[in-house]
Image 1 (cartoon, rainbow, N blue to C red):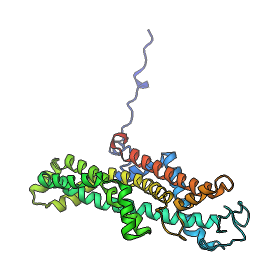
Image 2: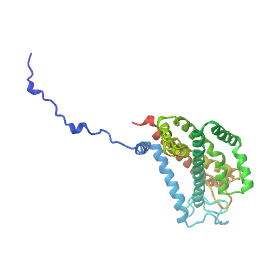
Image 3: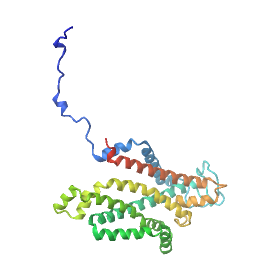
Length: 305
Protein backbone atom coordinates (compact mmCIF):
# COMPACT_ATOMS: atom_id res chain seq x y z
CA UNK A 1 0.00 0.00 0.00
CA UNK A 2 1.34 3.40 -0.95
CA UNK A 3 2.23 5.61 1.97
CA UNK A 4 0.98 9.19 1.89
CA UNK A 5 3.69 11.60 3.02
CA UNK A 6 2.89 13.58 6.13
CA UNK A 7 3.92 16.88 4.56
CA UNK A 8 0.75 16.77 2.43
CA UNK A 9 -1.27 17.36 5.56
CA UNK A 10 -0.95 20.85 6.96
CA UNK A 11 -3.15 22.19 9.75
CA UNK A 12 -5.55 24.89 8.66
CA UNK A 13 -4.62 28.36 9.80
CA UNK A 14 -6.84 29.61 12.61
CA UNK A 15 -7.55 33.31 12.79
CA UNK A 16 -8.68 33.93 16.35
CA UNK A 17 -9.91 37.43 15.49
CA UNK A 18 -12.43 35.94 13.04
CA UNK A 19 -13.76 33.62 15.73
CA UNK A 20 -14.84 36.63 17.79
CA UNK A 21 -16.89 38.17 14.99
CA UNK A 22 -20.68 37.90 15.01
CA UNK A 23 -21.83 36.06 11.89
CA UNK A 24 -25.17 37.88 11.77
CA UNK A 25 -25.60 41.59 12.27
CA UNK A 26 -27.35 42.39 15.52
CA UNK A 27 -30.68 44.07 14.77
CA UNK A 28 -33.07 45.85 17.07
CA UNK A 29 -36.59 44.48 17.37
CA UNK A 30 -38.23 47.22 15.29
CA UNK A 31 -35.51 47.08 12.62
CA UNK A 32 -36.12 43.36 12.29
CA UNK A 33 -39.88 43.99 12.10
CA UNK A 34 -39.37 46.55 9.32
CA UNK A 35 -37.12 44.23 7.30
CA UNK A 36 -39.56 41.33 7.58
CA UNK A 37 -42.48 43.61 6.71
CA UNK A 38 -40.61 44.66 3.54
CA UNK A 39 -40.37 41.01 2.51
CA UNK A 40 -44.16 40.75 2.46
CA UNK A 41 -44.94 41.78 -1.12
CA UNK A 42 -48.70 42.00 -0.58
CA UNK A 43 -48.32 44.23 2.48
CA UNK A 44 -45.91 46.50 0.62
CA UNK A 45 -48.37 46.69 -2.26
CA UNK A 46 -51.09 47.74 0.19
CA UNK A 47 -48.78 50.37 1.69
CA UNK A 48 -48.03 51.84 -1.75
CA UNK A 49 -51.74 51.94 -2.61
CA UNK A 50 -52.52 53.68 0.68
CA UNK A 51 -49.76 56.26 0.19
CA UNK A 52 -50.98 57.04 -3.33
CA UNK A 53 -54.57 57.46 -2.13
CA UNK A 54 -53.42 59.76 0.69
CA UNK A 55 -51.31 61.88 -1.68
CA UNK A 56 -54.17 62.21 -4.16
CA UNK A 57 -56.57 63.15 -1.35
CA UNK A 58 -54.20 65.92 -0.26
CA UNK A 59 -53.12 67.36 -3.59
CA UNK A 60 -55.70 66.48 -6.28
CA UNK A 61 -58.43 68.91 -5.10
CA UNK A 62 -55.84 71.68 -4.68
CA UNK A 63 -54.56 71.57 -8.25
CA UNK A 64 -57.87 70.80 -9.96
CA UNK A 65 -59.71 73.57 -11.78
CA UNK A 66 -63.06 72.28 -10.48
CA UNK A 67 -64.66 72.77 -7.07
CA UNK A 68 -66.29 69.85 -5.30
CA UNK A 69 -69.39 71.86 -4.30
CA UNK A 70 -69.90 73.82 -7.56
CA UNK A 71 -72.99 72.72 -9.49
CA UNK A 72 -73.53 73.00 -13.24
CA UNK A 73 -77.00 71.89 -14.30
CA UNK A 74 -76.04 72.14 -17.99
CA UNK A 75 -73.34 69.51 -17.50
CA UNK A 76 -75.09 66.78 -15.52
CA UNK A 77 -74.33 63.04 -15.68
CA UNK A 78 -71.52 63.38 -18.21
CA UNK A 79 -69.38 60.25 -18.72
CA UNK A 80 -65.62 60.32 -18.03
CA UNK A 81 -63.79 62.60 -20.45
CA UNK A 82 -60.65 64.70 -20.79
CA UNK A 83 -62.35 67.59 -18.95
CA UNK A 84 -63.99 65.47 -16.24
CA UNK A 85 -61.82 62.40 -15.67
CA UNK A 86 -64.42 60.58 -13.57
CA UNK A 87 -67.46 62.20 -15.17
CA UNK A 88 -70.06 64.37 -13.42
CA UNK A 89 -72.97 63.64 -11.10
CA UNK A 90 -76.66 64.57 -11.25
CA UNK A 91 -75.88 68.18 -10.27
CA UNK A 92 -72.99 68.60 -12.70
CA UNK A 93 -70.30 68.38 -10.01
CA UNK A 94 -66.95 66.90 -10.96
CA UNK A 95 -66.75 63.32 -9.63
CA UNK A 96 -62.93 63.28 -9.74
CA UNK A 97 -62.60 66.17 -7.28
CA UNK A 98 -65.44 64.90 -5.12
CA UNK A 99 -63.81 61.47 -4.95
CA UNK A 100 -60.61 62.88 -3.48
CA UNK A 101 -62.41 65.28 -1.17
CA UNK A 102 -64.43 62.25 -0.07
CA UNK A 103 -61.16 60.42 0.55
CA UNK A 104 -60.19 63.15 3.02
CA UNK A 105 -63.47 62.75 4.91
CA UNK A 106 -63.46 58.94 4.90
CA UNK A 107 -59.79 58.63 5.90
CA UNK A 108 -60.21 61.28 8.60
CA UNK A 109 -63.17 59.40 10.06
CA UNK A 110 -61.34 56.07 9.90
CA UNK A 111 -58.05 57.29 11.37
CA UNK A 112 -59.66 59.47 14.06
CA UNK A 113 -61.96 56.67 15.19
CA UNK A 114 -59.06 54.19 15.29
CA UNK A 115 -56.76 56.51 17.26
CA UNK A 116 -59.43 57.39 19.82
CA UNK A 117 -60.35 53.70 20.15
CA UNK A 118 -56.69 52.92 20.86
CA UNK A 119 -56.37 55.71 23.41
CA UNK A 120 -59.49 54.79 25.38
CA UNK A 121 -59.09 51.03 24.97
CA UNK A 122 -55.44 50.95 26.08
CA UNK A 123 -56.09 53.07 29.18
CA UNK A 124 -59.25 51.17 30.14
CA UNK A 125 -57.83 47.71 29.49
CA UNK A 126 -54.49 48.42 31.18
CA UNK A 127 -56.09 49.80 34.35
CA UNK A 128 -58.59 46.93 34.46
CA UNK A 129 -55.89 44.30 34.02
CA UNK A 130 -53.29 45.75 36.40
CA UNK A 131 -55.75 46.47 39.24
CA UNK A 132 -57.71 43.23 39.00
CA UNK A 133 -60.30 42.20 41.60
CA UNK A 134 -63.42 44.33 42.01
CA UNK A 135 -62.05 47.13 39.84
CA UNK A 136 -61.57 44.73 36.94
CA UNK A 137 -65.04 43.27 37.46
CA UNK A 138 -66.78 46.66 37.48
CA UNK A 139 -64.86 48.05 34.50
CA UNK A 140 -65.46 45.00 32.31
CA UNK A 141 -69.18 44.87 33.22
CA UNK A 142 -69.48 48.50 32.08
CA UNK A 143 -67.81 47.52 28.80
CA UNK A 144 -70.19 44.55 28.43
CA UNK A 145 -73.22 46.80 28.94
CA UNK A 146 -72.02 49.24 26.25
CA UNK A 147 -71.22 46.32 23.94
CA UNK A 148 -74.80 45.04 24.30
CA UNK A 149 -76.29 48.32 23.01
CA UNK A 150 -76.85 48.15 19.22
CA UNK A 151 -74.37 50.52 17.56
CA UNK A 152 -76.90 51.63 14.92
CA UNK A 153 -79.41 52.62 17.62
CA UNK A 154 -76.70 54.55 19.44
CA UNK A 155 -75.75 56.32 16.21
CA UNK A 156 -79.34 57.35 15.48
CA UNK A 157 -79.76 58.73 19.01
CA UNK A 158 -76.55 60.73 18.67
CA UNK A 159 -77.64 62.13 15.31
CA UNK A 160 -80.91 63.27 16.88
CA UNK A 161 -79.09 64.95 19.77
CA UNK A 162 -76.00 66.33 18.00
CA UNK A 163 -77.14 66.57 14.37
CA UNK A 164 -75.36 65.28 11.28
CA UNK A 165 -71.66 66.00 11.02
CA UNK A 166 -68.13 64.67 11.03
CA UNK A 167 -67.79 64.85 14.83
CA UNK A 168 -71.06 62.99 15.33
CA UNK A 169 -69.90 60.16 13.06
CA UNK A 170 -66.61 59.80 14.93
CA UNK A 171 -68.30 59.90 18.36
CA UNK A 172 -70.84 57.29 17.25
CA UNK A 173 -68.05 54.90 16.21
CA UNK A 174 -65.96 55.50 19.32
CA UNK A 175 -68.70 54.89 21.91
CA UNK A 176 -68.48 51.12 21.48
CA UNK A 177 -65.46 50.81 19.18
CA UNK A 178 -62.88 50.95 22.01
CA UNK A 179 -64.24 47.86 23.79
CA UNK A 180 -62.49 45.33 21.56
CA UNK A 181 -59.16 47.09 22.08
CA UNK A 182 -59.75 47.20 25.85
CA UNK A 183 -60.38 43.46 25.99
CA UNK A 184 -57.22 42.71 24.00
CA UNK A 185 -55.07 44.97 26.20
CA UNK A 186 -56.61 43.58 29.40
CA UNK A 187 -55.86 40.01 28.33
CA UNK A 188 -52.25 40.88 27.52
CA UNK A 189 -51.78 42.72 30.82
CA UNK A 190 -53.20 39.79 32.80
CA UNK A 191 -50.61 37.53 31.14
CA UNK A 192 -47.67 39.86 31.78
CA UNK A 193 -48.35 41.35 35.20
CA UNK A 194 -47.10 38.25 37.04
CA UNK A 195 -43.89 37.97 35.02
CA UNK A 196 -40.57 38.33 36.84
CA UNK A 197 -39.63 41.71 35.39
CA UNK A 198 -42.96 43.22 36.50
CA UNK A 199 -42.68 41.70 39.98
CA UNK A 200 -39.11 43.01 40.27
CA UNK A 201 -40.24 46.51 39.32
CA UNK A 202 -43.08 46.35 41.83
CA UNK A 203 -40.66 45.13 44.54
CA UNK A 204 -38.47 48.17 43.89
CA UNK A 205 -41.45 50.41 44.59
CA UNK A 206 -42.73 51.23 41.10
CA UNK A 207 -46.32 52.45 40.91
CA UNK A 208 -48.91 50.92 38.59
CA UNK A 209 -48.72 53.90 36.22
CA UNK A 210 -44.96 53.44 35.79
CA UNK A 211 -45.29 49.67 35.37
CA UNK A 212 -47.88 50.17 32.64
CA UNK A 213 -45.86 52.87 30.87
CA UNK A 214 -42.38 51.36 31.13
CA UNK A 215 -42.93 47.60 31.17
CA UNK A 216 -46.38 46.55 29.97
CA UNK A 217 -47.12 48.87 27.04
CA UNK A 218 -43.82 48.19 25.19
CA UNK A 219 -44.51 44.46 25.41
CA UNK A 220 -48.10 44.65 24.14
CA UNK A 221 -47.46 47.16 21.35
CA UNK A 222 -47.66 44.45 18.69
CA UNK A 223 -51.35 43.49 19.15
CA UNK A 224 -52.22 47.17 19.66
CA UNK A 225 -50.72 48.18 16.30
CA UNK A 226 -52.31 45.28 14.44
CA UNK A 227 -55.75 45.90 15.95
CA UNK A 228 -55.55 49.62 15.21
CA UNK A 229 -54.61 48.95 11.59
CA UNK A 230 -57.60 46.63 11.16
CA UNK A 231 -59.94 49.12 12.89
CA UNK A 232 -59.51 51.79 10.20
CA UNK A 233 -61.19 49.87 7.31
CA UNK A 234 -64.02 48.87 9.66
CA UNK A 235 -64.66 52.55 10.44
CA UNK A 236 -64.54 53.51 6.74
CA UNK A 237 -67.02 50.78 5.86
CA UNK A 238 -69.30 51.79 8.76
CA UNK A 239 -69.30 55.38 7.50
CA UNK A 240 -70.29 54.16 4.03
CA UNK A 241 -73.05 52.04 5.59
CA UNK A 242 -74.43 55.00 7.57
CA UNK A 243 -74.31 57.18 4.46
CA UNK A 244 -76.29 54.56 2.56
CA UNK A 245 -78.96 54.83 5.26
CA UNK A 246 -78.97 58.62 4.90
CA UNK A 247 -77.11 59.18 8.19
CA UNK A 248 -73.79 60.31 6.70
CA UNK A 249 -72.11 63.71 6.51
CA UNK A 250 -74.40 66.54 5.34
CA UNK A 251 -74.28 68.09 1.88
CA UNK A 252 -72.35 69.60 0.22
CA UNK A 253 -69.60 67.62 1.97
CA UNK A 254 -68.60 64.54 0.04
CA UNK A 255 -67.51 61.22 1.45
CA UNK A 256 -67.14 57.92 -0.36
CA UNK A 257 -70.24 56.69 1.43
CA UNK A 258 -72.46 59.59 0.37
CA UNK A 259 -71.14 59.42 -3.21
CA UNK A 260 -71.84 55.68 -3.38
CA UNK A 261 -75.35 56.29 -2.05
CA UNK A 262 -76.01 58.91 -4.73
CA UNK A 263 -74.48 56.66 -7.38
CA UNK A 264 -76.77 53.72 -6.59
CA UNK A 265 -79.78 55.74 -7.75
CA UNK A 266 -78.34 56.12 -11.26
CA UNK A 267 -76.49 52.82 -11.48
CA UNK A 268 -78.30 51.56 -14.57
CA UNK A 269 -77.61 54.61 -16.74
CA UNK A 270 -74.64 56.33 -15.03
CA UNK A 271 -72.49 53.53 -13.55
CA UNK A 272 -69.37 55.70 -13.16
CA UNK A 273 -71.05 57.61 -10.32
CA UNK A 274 -70.97 54.44 -8.17
CA UNK A 275 -67.91 52.76 -9.69
CA UNK A 276 -65.24 55.23 -8.59
CA UNK A 277 -66.18 55.75 -4.92
CA UNK A 278 -66.93 52.03 -4.47
CA UNK A 279 -63.59 51.12 -6.07
CA UNK A 280 -61.63 53.37 -3.72
CA UNK A 281 -63.54 52.10 -0.69
CA UNK A 282 -62.52 48.56 -1.68
CA UNK A 283 -58.91 49.54 -2.41
CA UNK A 284 -58.53 51.35 0.91
CA UNK A 285 -60.04 48.48 2.89
CA UNK A 286 -57.80 46.05 1.02
CA UNK A 287 -54.71 48.17 1.73
CA UNK A 288 -55.37 48.45 5.46
CA UNK A 289 -56.22 44.76 5.78
CA UNK A 290 -53.06 43.52 4.05
CA UNK A 291 -50.95 46.02 6.01
CA UNK A 292 -52.51 44.69 9.20
CA UNK A 293 -51.79 41.10 8.15
CA UNK A 294 -48.22 42.06 7.25
CA UNK A 295 -47.69 43.75 10.61
CA UNK A 296 -49.11 40.73 12.43
CA UNK A 297 -46.68 38.42 10.64
CA UNK A 298 -43.73 40.78 11.10
CA UNK A 299 -44.42 41.26 14.80
CA UNK A 300 -44.94 37.56 15.52
CA UNK A 301 -41.91 36.43 17.56
CA UNK A 302 -42.42 32.83 16.42
CA UNK A 303 -41.49 33.86 12.87
CA UNK A 304 -38.25 35.61 13.81
CA UNK A 305 -35.15 34.04 12.32
